[in-house]
Amino acid sequence: MNLSVETQPGLLNDKSSPNTSVTIETPELDLTVGTLIRDSRQRKGLSQKDLAIRCGITPVQLCRIENDECIPNKKTLKMISSHIGISYTTLIIEAGYNDMSGKRIYYKRDGTELNINQLICCIYKADSDLLDYFQGFDYFGTPENVEVLKLILSAMRKEADLCNIPSEKRDLKSTFFQSTFQAIKSFISSSLKPITKWILQRDY
Image 1 (cartoon, rainbow, N blue to C red):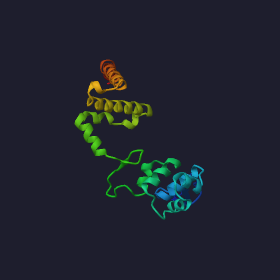
Image 2 (cartoon, rainbow, N blue to C red):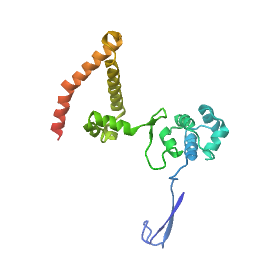
Image 3 (cartoon, rainbow, N blue to C red):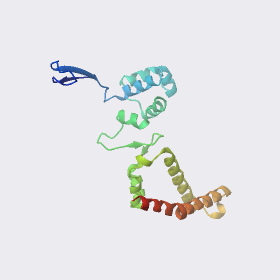
């Protein structure tokens, strides 16, 4: 896309010239899903045949997708996303699978829809203040912190499952896990919590 800008005399450090026309090259802002796939494939150095084989479709099908002659299904989009460096969620949205009413729909990495409302309701019922701790998570949610949070939540889920199993029916691994996780929680509550509280009071 070329953008033509007309300037007045005295601008662009050219006082002697009259009105000057400057052409600025700008990238296309509204890419179609086909163009997005084609450009990303080319940046990866893949031919249409290479990508088609990896995604389990024919080169002709991929050519039609890139020319926006057809909209690929979600399964194909998921396969394509894993090879071109574009997230599945982005391709889903660009392909028009999002609710056209403006409702935001998010997808997990496996391609299934994420029920945001259900998640928020679960957190709110557990502790409404917990939602506030996720404010600005994009700032402190490093990959390491996200991994730790996922591990803790997975352990909580496992512990809850074990509560429904009589102690005499639990195997040695489950018993060891439960006692270890309880020790970790005890450490966090007795040691880490007061330290964190002291740091916060000092900073504010």
